[in-house]
Amino acid sequence: MNKNNTIIHFTIFALIVILAFVVRIYNIDSVPSGIYPDEANNGTNAFDAMQSGHYPWFYPDNNGREGLFLNIIALLFKFFGVSILTLKLPAIIMGTLTVIGVYFLARELFISKPRLALIASYLTAVSFWAINFSRISFRANMMLPVLTFAFYFFFRGIRTKKAIDFIISGAIFGLGFHTYIAFRIAPALLIVLLILLTIQGGRIFLSDYWKKILIFIFCAVIVAFPIFYTYHQHPEYLTSRSGDISVFSPSEKGLVEILTDTISTSLLKFNVHGDQNWRHGFPPLPTLEPVAGIMFLCGIIFSAWIFIYFFYRRVSHKNTNRKLVTHGFLIAWFFAFLAPEFMTTEGLPHSLRSLGTLPVVYIFAAFFINYLLERAQHYSHKLFICASVLTIALLIYIGFFGIMQYHVLWATSTEQAHAFNKNLTDIAHYIPTLPVTMPIYIVASSMERLPIRLLNIHNQNIIFIEKNEINKIDTAHFFYLISPYETDLIIDTLSKNLTLTIEPINMTLDSSFTLIYPTK
Image (tube, rainbow, N blue to C red; front, side):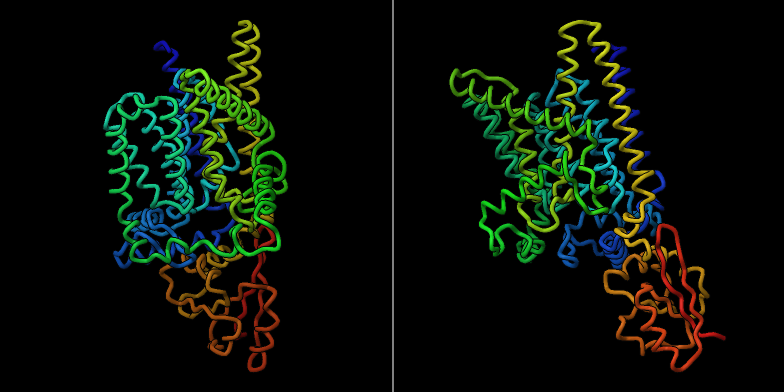
């Protein structure tokens, strides 16, 4: 690219990054409509870590979670206080970094196609799938920039032969083991990549890079060592999230039949039948916007054909071509990180478990869009201009569709409010309006308590009880009930000895709860 084109290119990239950050942070206090208990669990653990000054590498409760994401939240709490923004800011930042990482990875993989990298980063920036999870305080968000930047520096190192690239790549790769359980599949992807590089380069590759690969491994192990040592001390942590949902669990169906079902369901979610959980998607729509979905499908099929073609050429004619590694790597990444989804049987399709595929899904889509533009440019300049205008229009449509789908349609739906337990967050916001001099009893299960506790972390008047502990209530004080369905039980119990005032509290998006207190 000449100087002017370079300025335009990076200006567009900067605007894409700004757009990605804005759509991820906009209205974060209100959308999603509530703090899901799993998010609140991360927040309460982070607050406790901040209070104690002990930041563990692994948090064993709630089925076990790697500690890095939670410890970042704890540091934000320490310097900026506890809030919805500080709880979700790490996810927002990681989502934005993913957009940047997708750009640099695509730019390195398709080094002569900078336009492809822009398209891939843009699709990631405006995708409903990406926006949604970037606004939920789940540690899975951290895995995506780690993957993209680790492999970006690895491929950069292959090109430059500089040890510093392998040092950075290895350090980032080792960091991945501190992020999310699905990252444990990454070493298998790395092995596939090394096999592909060996097939392409043969002994020359091994002789040129074996020292640098050892540097990569050394740096990765050093960075990952703390959590490896934690697993050594507590081997039960390694299997804390596996069990009955595995395809290997006892079942009336055979393994082949189960895998056929799970793989087909996982693949169909991209274009046909998406995740039916309102926390993960917009049922019944597929995971990808229709145009982007078609481009992804064409891209992955075309990529597979290219890989097969150049693999055949390498084996039969000893020809080498970078495309063998590039497309083989992308296909391997896709199926490797689809495995955490199709190797389970619960709640399929499941967009969270397959989140690791997100970067390459949009790289595949961008690859095919760019391929069509290249073909148009090859035939005639006029056709290229027409194709470019049409592509820009479609990309604007995809962006408008994704952003509006999330911030207008999904954000105002009662289904997403229920999925995120909006009533719990509404209760948490309502508590400060009550008199500060009297205890507030709240009927809530252990997980339901967490959003309420987190948003009232310094309130000492809150007393959580189970339904069967109503007799513990001091009837001279406020009693705050989280579920309108349990109101009758509480009223029948308390009204035997005193007169009650009952106030149904109705919030937006069909959220409600009941306030009960003794009548003066």
